[in-house]
Length: 270
Ligand SMILES: [Zn+2]
Image 1 (cartoon, rainbow, N blue to C red):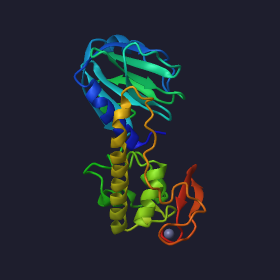
Image 2 (tube, protein in one colour):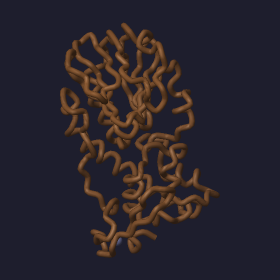
Image 3 (cartoon, rainbow, N blue to C red):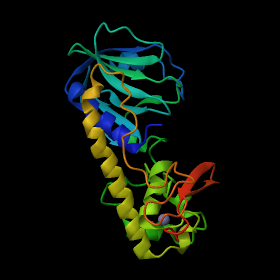
Image 4 (spheres, helix red, strand yellow):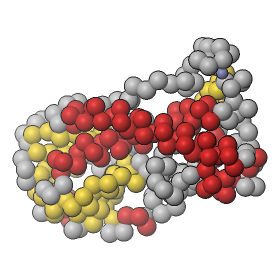
């Protein structure tokens, strides 16, 4: 599933190709995405100039005079640029034809992605209740500490809650808790302020490194297969059950928490 770093890389990858170009035509080949694509968006977007493209959580926001396209990549979605006339594959559901002669193409084999047009994207139900960006200045240890008081939920589920902070997916939650030395089972409300400072720093650092790694794949957005994939990053605990902790040699443990696998080191994380 594309995580925040992959979405940020998609945003940076498509930006130079689409900003300040005009949409000449939108082709929706299959409206059955996670939510059906509204009828009439093709007409509304025709002849609209693309002003900007940004990311909020795992949504791409493509601003035009007719409103903002809110695009989510779902489980298997990807965006890439092809020349006009490039035949569409079976999973290429939406094309934005541009006056530059290129096409911004949305591919999504499992169709869990989504596509909405909104005049007030940040107030859209999908985005209105989202917590702060993990790389933004509103997110730090004090914020996590304040929000966690009185909460009995595990710290891992707490940081994966998008209303608390967006974009901390399962891999990043496990890795940042390891980095901060915090046991993922611990109640969010019973973690001291200084430990949340370490956790917030770990989350920022790990996400930032993944985004930097993604920078090396930017050229793949033109003409490529649109699947830059997961960035190679050394994982300390995630998917390493039964392997030795790189710090203390204890075997990495795994268990299921909120229907997701959690990996941790019993010795390093207390
Ligand atoms: Zn260890």
